[in-house]
Image 1 (cartoon, rainbow, N blue to C red):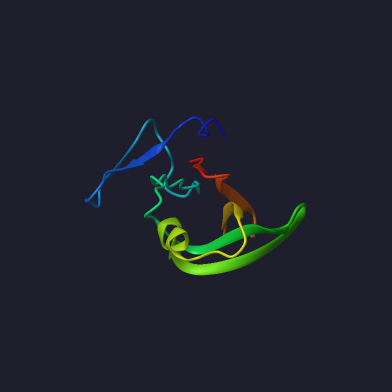
Image 2 (cartoon, rainbow, N blue to C red; image 1 turned 90 degrees about the horizontal axis):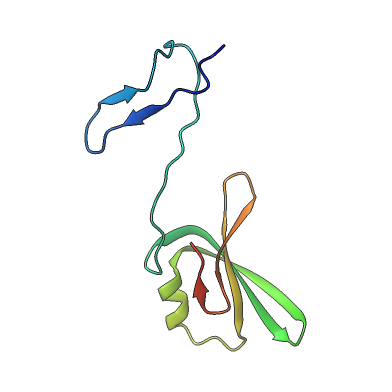
Length: 102
């Protein structure tokens, strides 16, 4: 249709938006939301992967928690990675071997 190159921009703290070109009102579009992720960010679903012995891994799903809150807990086994569990059941790696990746 020729409209795929356009964009819709939503202005923060307002109900206003603008477009880069003519976009019909009935054309659906995908909204991407970008948020800065820090160690203080609370996640709805945070998957922790830890090593119970060399080469043997287990996982645990935490709800409504930040990385810092997990770091404060005494972990018996070393944590290897944290993933965000997305709504579509894919996972996003955000922390690995002591380093924030996003």
